[in-house]
Picture 1 (cartoon, one colour):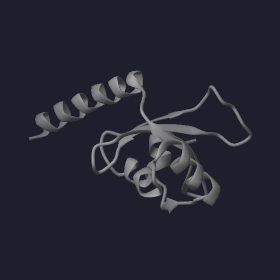
Picture 2 (cartoon, rainbow, N blue to C red):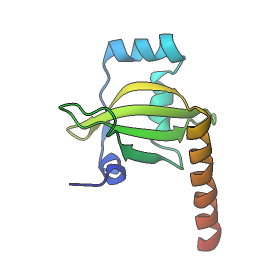
Picture 3 (cartoon, rainbow, N blue to C red):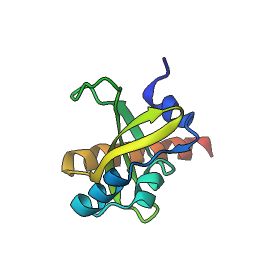
Picture 4 (cartoon, one colour):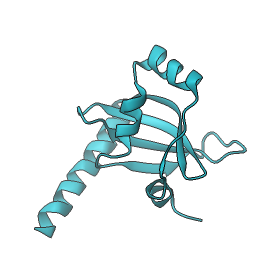
Length: 113
């Protein structure tokens, strides 16, 4: 089985449930486009969601939109498609974790030059 990050890298698109899209907007003012941007910007942190076991494995991701909005999303992967369940702004702890990953990513890029 692939690790969570590589599982996301192998995805070819998104699958959307209209109800989830509407709920994310009403509850958290997160658009579908912002959810998708999360997966294309660095750093992206992906891990299994072991706190909420279901019949379908869930993952969570920390990332940012093109405008720099820091988001947290829970999602599944079905047939190489990302299916976002909820998405919201990161809390303080999540933001700090993302910031540490950003520093690591920047350090990595500096050493590659």
